[in-house]
Amino acid sequence: MLDMEPVYDVVWPKSRLGAQSRPPAHRLDTLHGKRIAFAWDHLFRGDELFPVLAAELQRRFDGIEIVGYETFGNLHGPNERELVDGLPAALAMHRIDGVVSGNGC
Amino acid sequence: MPTVSLVCEGFEHQAAATGRGLGFDALPIALLRGHVDAQSYDDMVAAFLEHTVDQVIDGLTAEIRVDADGAAEPAALDVVARGTIDRIHRTFTERGWSDGLAIIPPTRERVEAFIAVSGHDPWRLIGTARPSGRDITVWSVAVNAVMAGCEPEQLPVLLAIADALVDPHYGVEHSGNTTGADALVIVNGPVIGELGFNHGPGAMRDGAGGPNTVVARWLRLFLRNVHGFTADEHDKATFGNSSRVVMAEDEAALAEIGWQPVAAEFGHPAGSDAVTIARMNSGIIVGSVVGSTPEQILPYLADGLARVVGWDLTHVYGLGQGQQRPLLVLSPVLARIFGRAGWTKADVQQALFERARIPARRFEQLIGEWSNLTAGRRTLVDLVDEGVVPPVFAESADPDRLVPIVTEPAKFVIAVAGDPNRTNAYVLSSDGPHGDWTSKPIDRAYSTDLVCSVSRPSDAAR
View 1 (cartoon, each protein chain N blue to C red):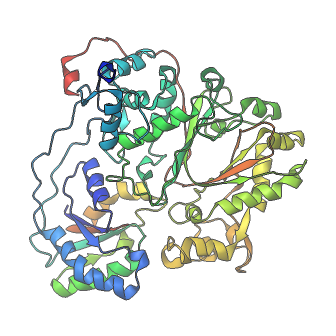
View 2: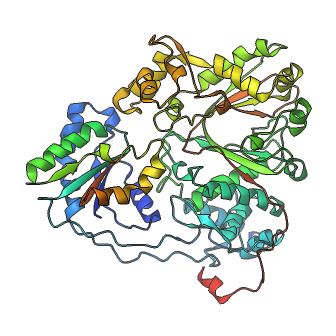
View 3: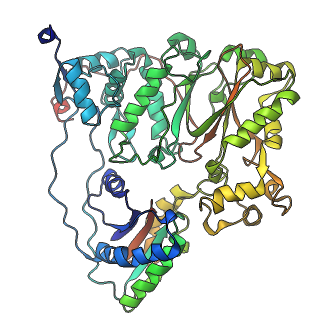
């Protein structure tokens, strides 16, 4: 009797990936002399880790400048959406070369 | 601009999926070993210096090679599986497309018929699903609806919920967050009676009658398949909640006591069909309430609200600001106690604001000392001085002073549902901006979207 069971052709429950894929930006040739921004979601001990990172990068790379997370605000707080939307302009205004964001836990 | 993201162990897949959903493959991450909240400062820093810093440097300087496209994904009308009902069920479960419960096989014919009843254009784009980046079309809503066991007449309700998910105010992208809140949908309007939604006994129990359960199941399948909330992508709930059955209000009781339905608080007047959705973290029963006057029952209701909030006070300030909006569900009997005494909803909200309070010390422990969610572990006095919470939170510096659990009385949401002959209430804490109260109208009119029903050649490429 199982041989007489109906057979179904079914369609996909997901949908098309609408976001157009873009290649990541080119990386920096060096961190010497570069301006690196920290962008923080005010969670998961970033206030303890980012200073450690800043000190270590400054130890390893001459002329590196760190623009701290306080410049860009709490990126996972009450004003998350407006701050994230404004981030490209803020990074441009501060002449940032690269960003370290965190912490995702 | 080159970026690198610091991510704790266990979050690598979510980071990759989030990047992909935004259109970026292979965004670099730098891994934090273990979970920083469970490490001593010295251990955390040692691991960071040993394992993570080099990855930060590589992430900013090492060119990224993006592999050629992986296996192409199916198009909407492609047959992705063929088989008996058992085989389809197994296949969908194995591929993560189902919740493990039996599904109705979503054949093309069944999905087309589901949509045809309301006349919608299957390919109408409702929006982009966050964080997956996938298209939300009427078709995608209907496929998951067929799977869940929904009826075609329920499609307008599902489309209204899909609209709410697309609304940035709701914050659907947070639906896989660690604390695992789950969405509660509240239905209002004549649609309750006309589609047979249950608002009586078992109003929040699955299988208690009406389409309450299948609509809720559709929502979880839709979040899974279209928004990408699965364990290997965006769902990072530590434990999660079971899906919340759709709740319908007892609108006859509301009308009797002159209260507006929940949807009216969000812009949809009484008598209009609407869905209201919010993600709720925790719920507790306030059972066997004794009393025949508001003054007699208020202490117990207020106590329930004060007990149900905990971690979620971070949405008073922290992760949110003034965005904790707990829900009080009153059985009709309890609602009528207020109605008989001439109390409006606003009166009840004011009374709850004055009574649902906890010691300031405990509030600060919950959002700072125990959870580190308020950077700098500021006190409520600090937060009032900064102007980010109202002065009522710091009427003195006494750590044992009682403070509210919301920023103003109107933040309490009050609904009426449940067994009309029981003296019980139910309270739930909200997840603030991570699923914020959002209400959309249900449009049950026959749609004029569909101009022509002939399949276009381009449909095969969808």
